[in-house]
Image (tube, rainbow, N blue to C red; front, side):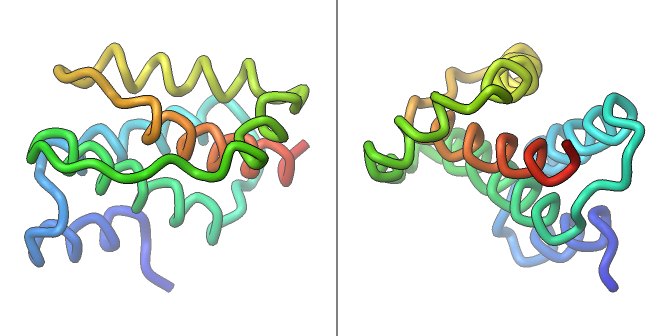
Length: 120
């Protein structure tokens, strides 16, 4: 099984993500692990870290993506875990030099809420 760091190193080697994005993504997962004190769902964490590092790299490269469907965003916003997800995203925003677009934030909310639901 590939570790998070190995996954990020592969993406960096392929110039899919930047070193800065890799660092923030790795720190975000470390932060998540230290706060939950539970075994994290590996597959969902891998999706989060891949999306996060890719998103930050897209932002720095001036690229964008479309937001997820409105129905999905509304469903995630109703979750009782949305505030915890927003706290983690706020940490990412405070550690990234550029503004994170709402479309990327929406996807991050989905990833975080999904992880928190599984470990709840």
